[in-house]
Length: 331
Image (tube, rainbow, N blue to C red; front, side):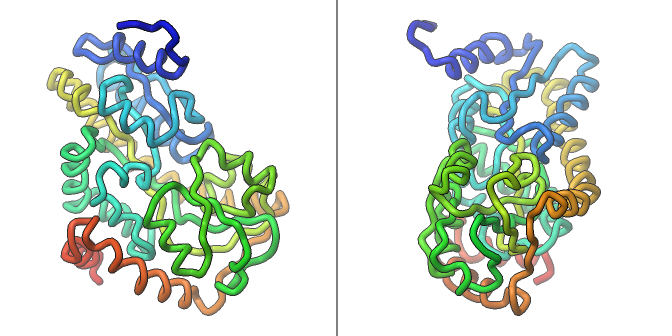
């Protein structure tokens, strides 16, 4: 393998493969998209401690936050190719590689943390995991529960869709999320996660949406003033492992990975329930103003579900897939 003229991130990834891409691995590299203190970091930290305990310290997991090993979408390819072991990333960044996972980001499908957990730990989650192995060459081994993506902006309180007009809002490069804002009457600005804080700081965009925990951990309160409690997407952020890397491990290490993922999933759920309320109070104390949508968000919900859902029936595998999810949730 030649390293001449290789960018640092690629070199790190390649080194990860040489050290940890085999059954004799001692250390696995784990890319974490968000900063320390985030829900992603909390989940990854629990995965690390559980995995190391289950392998009696023979195997280690080393965490790299803040996209040190590449952007979230990039890490899907890296894990698939075996040049990166694990990645914790937003589920919307897997959707371009495995479109059926997009059912989890259809607006207003998930309406509570309990529903999110029920989906990803049940039959729906198992099916989506199998699909990501088939489509993207990566395996979901655990889930981060980060909460609903609330809208933030630097200009004004937003209660209605009329208030939203004229604002420049950053969104991930995810077609479903882009379509949601278009249904609300604006054209959002697709942008990589690593560019978002600077874009907000320089007023290239006015706002963005992310869960409270992410708003706090990324210090968006320094560049944003207003929060609107929309609940259009519940942010789920899986930990993935390259399927090739997973298959190379002996059975006991594979089991340790899956068991550690299950423990980290449960820990993440409890941590969200215990943490989000405190973070809301902290953000308010730092000067952010929290507003609820007018009329119980009915206009937002109506526009998004009637416009966006039908547009993506084919990509998620058919309307019956959405019906299956809704049935699992008792709707």
